[in-house]
Length: 262
Length: 303
Image (tube, rainbow over all chains, first blue to last red; front, top):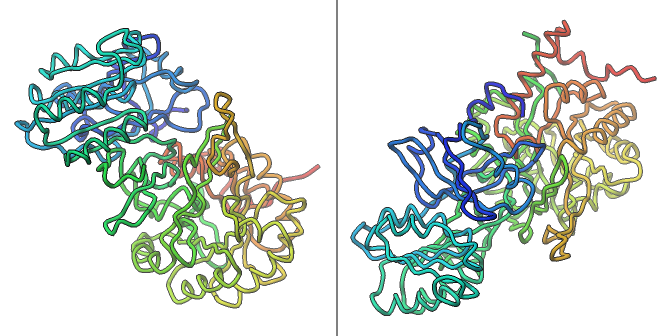
């Protein structure tokens, strides 16, 4: 995109870029105005260079208000995220942020269980940093080569439980097994989850069984990212229990699990 | 500084750049970025007689230099629009084009009659939405149906009536003439082209509705061609749209015969797109020593 006074408002410098796995990248963006406002669970909408029409929504993995930076971790899924992965420290990126409705957290002394699946794991990190030793992070990946952020969760002081689909790292199997064990060990004040839809659905079902508040971060193909174009619709229930379409970019990405029509 | 003002159906616009219906909601989301009074006008989200929930997701797919959408006219209904959104829009000091749609000519007329009692500046009748089963493009792809719905809405309102045309037709000029004959005051075109993308891995269409409306820079030459054809076929003012993403695109659309342009997909990508297009159009006019935007309209010199 041609640089002008309008694109300047959305242009931010990349402080660092790190490859975490074959597909996953970590990017730290210098954006003091955005970092000052951002809350866990919100996302950024990045426009890759190279003639792409749509921005790529990516959840926020780190908010450093003192340094004035945001960290995002994303996976190369197609040409747009490939282009983003080729950016390096010192390059700039066109970003709309912070966007969306984030997590609503209990006090720091409350026990929370954070459930992440694959590239849905990154938005759990700011929550783990907030709750520290009161947080249990259960994250699941396809195999050991896809595992990310375990050291970051440990550094936050959280209890970490790693699962893989093939047992090549951590526990063999789905995140819902350790989730139920942790619920039984001590009922948490809140469960937060982000990841594949079947994982979210199973997590929400367990939360309902044990009567625990649950917030889930949803994903949908997105357009403007600010609630105007109405493409990223998801089915939710309104206050009367009637079905409605709300929008992942504005009403979400974080919803109370009970609102979501699975 | 060129004179960017234009006049359509007796309504003065401070500049010829209008966010298109569908990408701009009812304007509120864009106020965090700039004062809406800087816009030439706002074409509001297509609004129907009663609330509509729209289509299942996914509703969007990227294409080379464009996108597909299949929102399906999600809107809160005309009563909620008039009560909750219109007063705020009318206070924005810009021209408000209320985009309306319906499953039947009667529904469209009923919506227009309700708007007739408000201070909205212009009604844009959508007879071209490709994403709904009833009404929508079913009106806009037959001369008889286009004439019938225009006649019904014309009878329901004295507001300036702009009819938004579908490009998914054999001859857009025939539709334009049919609509002109029933009392339309202006035409806007083009709505989106019907398109489709398939996910190679799942072999499923990316859009849950299978097909959707194609827009963005890729459709710009089609839009310029149709605006030129229609402007030459009728004596009504034309609002041109379809892939306009720069001031030079706007100038080209005006030369083809448009009195103003609407901007859609460019705003989905960048909220500042309309302001950039206004600035670039002004710069282009200045650097070419052209005093007014209005004199560009229809100034193409065909071979």
